[in-house]
Length: 126
Image (cartoon, rainbow, N blue to C red):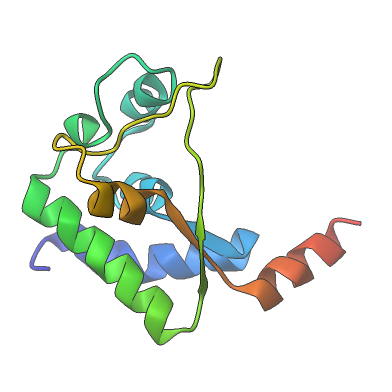
């Protein structure tokens, strides 16, 4: 990725892992500036068609973030876990992509967990 925001990608992934034991693509997009909080909130409330419409980057850049997060997770043996994204006030599934491509939808909605770090964080909250 040649985008300057991409330089923040690995540190953002590592920050999320350190703070909560998992990394989520929408949160990475927020953290590197490709998505702002207001637009993310509109998506979470179901006010817009899909998350990609809310991002400041074009589709190739967004998809490169998806690949980079997945690659990082695989290289670091993080455990993938499919997360169900729904609107804040109901059980309406949220869409990520303009195309509704099932492979991309799955990549966007997968959280990658560091089981050891997550367990450590949970122990610290007791």
